[in-house]
Length: 456
Image (cartoon, rainbow, N blue to C red; front, side, top):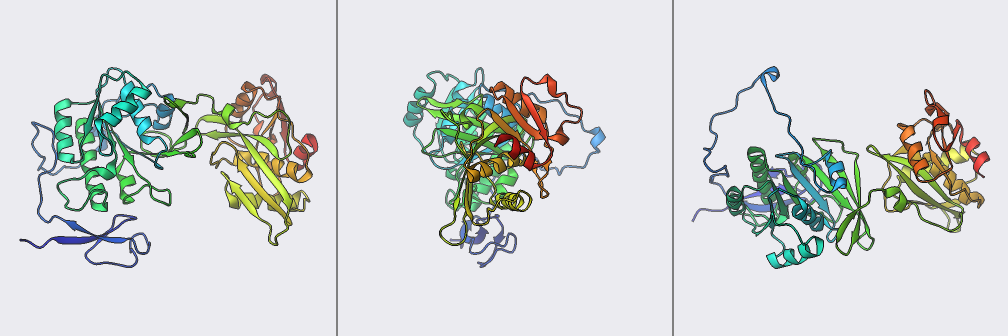
């Protein structure tokens, strides 16, 4: 019997080495190399039925000589998914969706599978039986005559069934359960995940069938498996949210066919995931009276304007070094804004504990909410309420100036649609903008002191 060949793979980046290394020379991580058994001889790879394997090397062509046909995206019933994908499903694309266990990845993909009208969908599951999937499908949507279930983990068998069925869409649940005969290591290993993804990518590109891969995540929150997995696929979607909460957020972290800053919001209900068409209503707490430390900021996620609630709590530090804690907001930027308020505004925040929370579980990177964050902190510090009908959209600079933000007109219209009476923006955002056209009072300011004097 021939001796088995072993290779060491880095679990973080997928680099390989003939011997164990304490530190990966490619990514610099420590103790990430694991030993796996690989097969030395080459086996036949997958290819479509009736098509010979390509043995002739490709030749370079001038870009002016290359012709292509405009591909039409497949629009699903799910407008949130269409938005994050850039307008729909691209033929031949490979999409990876990851998230924590129990967050709703399989539920989302099963909803898409059973709701596509006139499209044949192959749902491949390596984690559940046919009866379990049927039970969940009946709860989500009783229809779904064109959805076919296959419980299989061997990639060669999956490709044989796909070649016979000729589906318009294929879903793999999950990529960590698949196993290729080209590699002898166990399912879920670095080499297996990489090889199975490569075979699925070849299948998608040669047949034009879009493939959705459901992936697990590790304890750090990143996608499990080698980092090369994210480089191989066309689109990476991240499904986030609190397991014990009802709202879920679908983000795009990579998209070769659209924007990477789009956002989709769902609500987990008894019959599956419900689309939230107006997320501003759920991101703003309905309260009976105004409270200190609570303001509303106008932000943008991709092309979608959102109004979110910022909550602050400022109290005297009684345990030595003051605490600076934020949820959903960059902690370093919070410290910068506190330094601006103390230096330019004269507020003694150096001896205060400051806690900041973005309501709704969002993680905000738009600098346009700086003005709302500063106003929220001072409102809690002075213990004075800010009117619930007022919102803010402006970036705060180190000199205490209110800087202009992009697409301020969209933010103003969103605030007016939700019934707000006034909004504070930067004076530098009003160039070429007619403020009288909006059914809301617009305050143009240049310094944060002007905002504090008007709202408190």
